[in-house]
Length: 159
Image 1 (cartoon, helix red, strand yellow):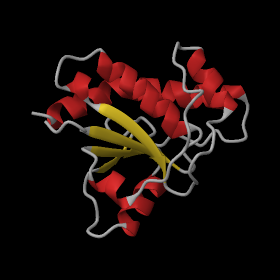
Image 2: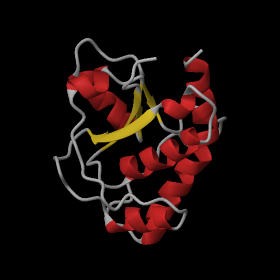
Image 3: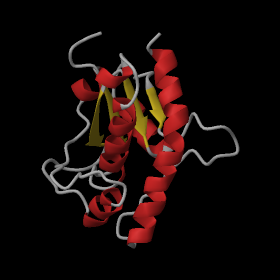
C-alpha cells in the first residue's frame, strides 16, 4: 500500500460537510484493523477557495461528538488530488457530476458518502450552509449513519 494512500471527501466549498465527513470517517477508520487504519482521509472543495476557515456550526456539531476540526482550512479538489485518491466521496450527485465532467479521463472512483447504505436511504447530504446548528447536526448524523456501510465498502475495495 502506498505511503500516502488516502480517501478524498468533497463538498461545494469545503467549509461545512466535507471537513465534518472527513473527520468522522478518519475517526472510524482509526478503530479498524490494518490496512484500513492506515488510510488518511482528506477533504476538498469542488467550487471553493483555498484557506477559508471551517464554519463555526461545523466545529460545534463535531465538538459535540468529541472531534475538533477548528483548525481546518479549505482547499480545492485539484486534478492530482482527485486522480491520486483511492476513493473520492461527494455529498451530492452534483459533486460527482462536477468531478467527472471536469477531469479527463473521467475518474471512475467517485461515489457518494451515503451511496452504500441500504435502500430506501437518501444518498445525498444536504448543504447546511447558512442554516442553524440543527441543520449541521442533521448533516453530521447522516454522515455517522453512513459510516458502517462505507467502511465495509472500503474494506472490500482493499482486498
